[in-house]
Image 1 (cartoon, chains in turn orange, green, brown, red):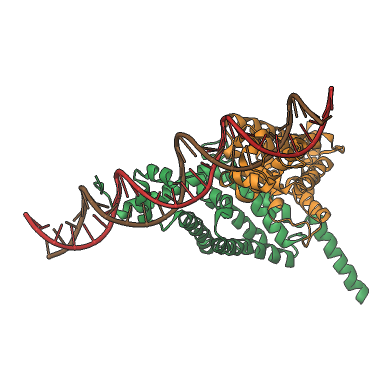
Image 2 (spheres, rainbow over the protein chains, first blue to last red):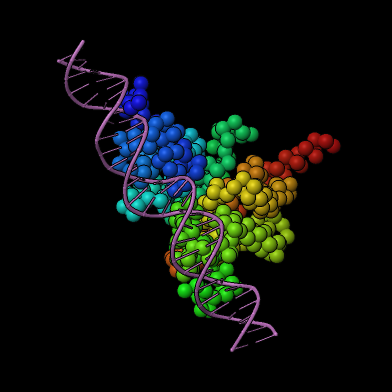
Length: 215
Length: 215
DNA sequence: GGTTGATCTGAACACGTGTTCAGATAGCAT
DNA sequence: ATGCTATCTGAACACGTGTTCAGATCAACC
């Protein structure tokens, strides 16, 4: 026996990627063999090399495609006016997008170290792009005095870590709905960075006093 | 050649664990071979089996010992009165403790899936104990009306994810000191859950109105 | 309906895996 | 100095690894 009935690269190709994603997410890149992936597809190991030059590329393509999807999706998202609303939109987008792709998210920061140096750098740059999107929101809010952020870079990483955490416990049929989780997390993120009202009032008061003293 | 000069189990034993920790953290459990660990120690692979029954136990011992250390350390910590201060103490403890053991922390949630089912359950229970310590703080604050938390379990996980995130970028000789990071993170954690003052006032007002209506 | 090219098998390659063990040597007690 | 035991080597075992490739078979086009 050789070629299988109904075989077509348009079908097998995506199935190879899907099997790799599933198995990498479940057991880790290093722990999964090409023969396991092939078995998941229903094919012999040699056939995989029609769809990828090697195992490393299989991982890299998954990670790169995912990051590109994230960046594109956030670009396409509508951005409301004002840093507070902007941050909420980001948080909600992040939660929603990531919960819809739990496996991609998982391998995206679990398997980074299994990338060869060049591939790693590529991914690192894409990730920084995404972080910059959030940091620019924080910076704007800081400038406008509506956010009370000590260090925008650090806060960016802290918020993303918190939002990412959701993927490690969320179950679609669990106790909480996606909408509820979205609301809770975006609320927490907002509160973590928002300028407290008493600080805002104090800032205004000091500004008025300074103006009065200048007269 | 057989036994090496200066060889002693009190010396080699810890060196085996240290080498395993270092290599597992750097490349992942599945990607590290017993021969690599042996080479790091300066010994042949067979000698490792004087110090561990197998590779799996090497990983499990590292993870279990670390979790036990965390639990013991938090037990020994002084707990200030009041949920707000209690939460701050927890946040600061967590940051400090985890930044002092970056490799242990890393493998502790990177390599969990490489544990055999029984070992996994043991670790899961220890981890839940730690999460419960934080959740009980949140619950108390909720009862006293000083925290505005939608769901204590979910918030617990979100906070721990945020605090854990610090280990992925912190460098001891970096831009920010440990004390500063501790302060920023504990501040963020506090703000993320604290009851806003206007809400607190409104709650009081409503309580007074209800009391007045009852007369 | 025959031909061509895409698709897959099955075997092979060279090497790496965790683990075991007989034998060799060092440290230590007598 | 001798004997005992803790410690390590080096080779072996059975199997798994990523990858290659000649040959077989199917899908599709003329």
